[in-house]
Image 1 (cartoon, rainbow, N blue to C red):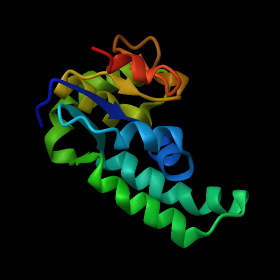
Image 2 (spheres, helix red, strand yellow):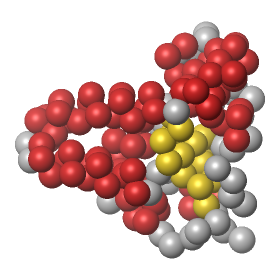
Image 3 (tube, rainbow, N blue to C red):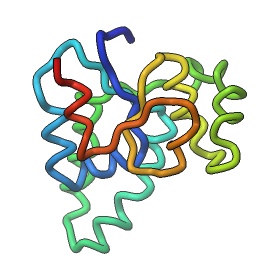
Length: 141
């Protein structure tokens, strides 16, 4: 898991990749020097939320899950066994905001990468964060 640049994606970005166009376009941009990764926890969280969002938007659930499955070709899932050693430092940073988000912080600490999120809980925890409408700036030379 080494790259010149990369981002750790929060579950909300995975969901945006399933239902939106902009995040998917960014993920599909050809650049082999970029690592997109997300903790296994975020993949499970996004998977749980897809049916609710698809129903609310009146979208075909099979299409949504197909879009979700295709994310595995674009985003590397990081297993808890790889990032569990960073649990405590991650929890210390995020505990006052949302302790359930510690896996994202742990992967970011482990790989020394910024976080791509729309969740304000990640702001101010001492790690770089990028939001979808600014993330392309991160990849400019």
